[in-house]
Image (tube, rainbow, N blue to C red; front, side):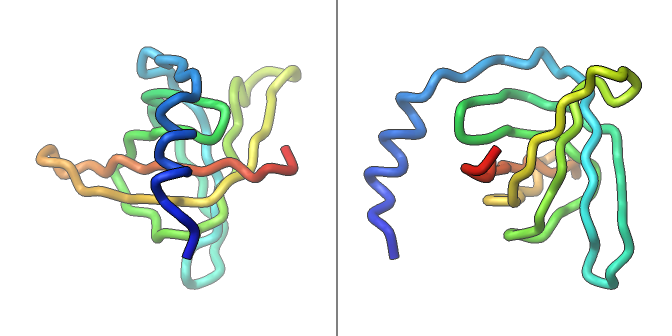
Length: 103
């Protein structure tokens, strides 16, 4: 197992951009092999990942495609995996995505 203290300090020193609850689109394949998509809120964005607010749980390690400005011809796709999925008091889920380093 990797030394989490190094990862934690790198994560904390990374610049984080508050997305002001901007809507983004995500796509993933569920456990039954069906492709799913959803428009959700992005809470913040950093060099290593995103923090999302979603009304459905996504299992850890689920591969996710994130699309910024999907209605635009100039959209940008990022690829990542679910690092954490934590149920909030509201019943929604805070999802942390780690971006693939090959982006």
